[in-house]
Amino acid sequence: MISFLEKIQEKYFNRFWNPYIVLIFAGVFAAFYFGLTGTLWAVTGEFTRWGGNLLQLFGVDTSHWAYFQAIKLKGEPINRTDGWIVIGMLLGGLFSALMSQNFKWKAPRQKRRWVWGFVGGILAGFGTRLAMGCNLAAFFTGVPQFSLHSWFFIAGTALGTYIGVKLAVLPIFKGKAKVEFGVRPAKIGSTTAHTQNRQLYTASAVFVIVALIAIYYISAGQPLLGIAELFGAVFGMLIQRGQICFTSGLRDLWLTGRGKLAKAIILGMAIQTVGTAIFIFKGAQPVIHWASLGSLLGGIMFGVGIVIAGGCETGWMYRLMEGQVQFVAVGIGNIVGATVLAYGWDHWGIFNGLVKGAPEVNLITSLGWSGALLVTGAFLVILYLLVVWKETSYMKKVKRESIPSSKTTSA
Image (cartoon, rainbow, N blue to C red; front, top):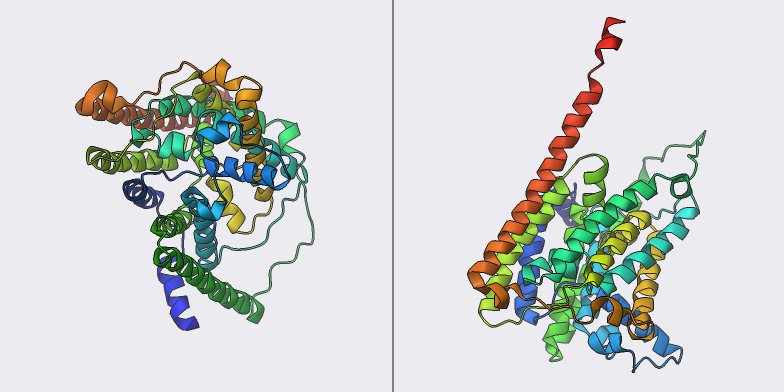
């Protein structure tokens, strides 16, 4: 059996996958998931429900919280499609990390990374729920739903990641570099081979668990839960193999001018838009949210938070499944931030101050099919051109700085 697993590992999991291919597949699967279930590939709404379930566990009555009523807090994670999307993503990411030999327990050398991971997670969690979606439901899967609120969120996220990059270079975030001497290299030998074999066997066990869960729910007359778990596992595997993290895509654009991941994300959104439009045309109901000031401010908070935390809502999930334990703090922060927003939605007047009265703009009903497809396509093209412009301007800047001045040359 181990030889068979090694062949699979060598052929499909020996290196990271091209992000363009990964995000095209992610876009296609996201469109089909919407068509089959009527819901989105999304995670932070479920994180908010997890916060509500935990509060209920400790005796807190959340039944009157307006936000939980809006997002339908009912039952436990295993009774919800969104719950199984999240669980499936974690299982899929773990399977992929094990099969590719990328799993290794890692803790940050600087203890402050735990603190900033938690703080960044809170900011991101609060911001995403203020905007009614994260880098998925208000970005990657939000634009293909023809919901204008996602445009506001994207603008806010771009600004927020720029601010986050400026903050991240400050000493309070970076800390002091540590120099270590006498670090022994890892031993190569039977122990390493044994560890690799163990990871392959564990990956096989995870695969079987995913399959059995899906079979159980489908045979029990709850096919949507089984479908959600399977799609979640596929999404988790894709983001781990492609190392798809919106933080990296946007942060790298600001820091180094590299736009490959950002362009791949936009391409995946374009592919998904076509597929989603077909399902909506056939009768599926798009998911539309308020195009409000809250969407913009939520995007800014999200952008700042993910840079400080070091990972977006999808990024921290697959990195945790690779054994990077600091992202536990990011995940807990996400749940805390989202739950605080849920409380403040009506108790602090957040809804009345930032959202109430804002329109829920469905571009299809507002502009018609041709208009919705045209403006959405134009929006994605503009985003793509902005990324290309940023790449080009950065390269020109590097080229100028690499050319010595005339004074230096004459000297």
